[in-house]
Image (cartoon, rainbow, N blue to C red; front, side):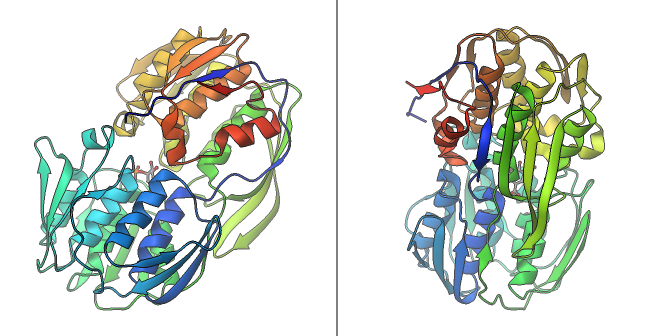
Length: 438
Ligand code: S3P
């Protein structure tokens, strides 16, 4: 990415007040995809106005779907039905978004036209065979670059048939890609996962009227049905809330309220881990909003102690490890993370990037192939590099809020992919009072 943006943070004096973080990224992607493929008009509220989800919307627009944006966070999607997409001209640009590319690959495998999916420098290095292989078993014809990376050339007009697929990786993106291709397949498609992952695709397909049988770790559907337009209410993204939850926990004197946070149990593994470390997080006003559990979270400062992170929570907090590294760096004693090798193939190698950054700020981190051992200590400020990874940049901003002195964070522009208002919200509640962009 050519844009270059560095942040400089100074120590926070406490996080206070009430905030609402932007809409859930996973739900926003799926809401655009399913409403575009549905019969009728759907209204999406709480849509994430981030670069990743805007890329997905733009791709459907290029395939002939009319998407109106009457206000920020609102989309009216005029569905074209399962077979109504038009042949796009040129390459479809997924930007930084692995979710867009992997899920769209499943949808495009079932179309009557050829298409090409590409992405930015980070996405162009990420593994795609995890989706192209199961899709090929279903009859799809998809070429990758050497090494199994993007661009993906998807040949249309293939006859897809269902599959019974046992995924070696706990990945909602893999599961969703196969299920979305299953909409176009003859017969039954079943996906088994080594550990349960987020189930938004299954839940949203059901809401759009497509029969899906699912339970943690397994999902099954058949081709030959129709998606019917519905309205989708997107909850606030737990993964975006996580930066503020950890910051309020770490900075003495903090008391922060986060409203309307999505609490899908496949996303909230971090809460279990932080509570086991001693965090003070209270859930209030737990309710159902558009079929998803949401709550207001009240977070107060607490002293943390290091733990061994239970491997069974890893998939339920897969996007929260960068900020957990920071929590662990400030805890008493050591925190051990294992079973998290997927972190090495996210928007960056998150184990390497977080370990290098925390070491630069004065904390001892030993990397292992599938995790790290972080020796809690004192962050003294310094210079770190997020390597263009949005979640590492925001995690380092939390570290900068706790550090004793100024912290410079390089390469933060990609925060706009998932949380374009991070700095603004951070300033409003005291996380990033002194944060400046250069
Ligand atoms: C996502 C699934 C996760 C997660 C990503 C979003 C999704 O990826 O890291 O940010 O929306 O399905 P994997 O399924 O590859 O673990």
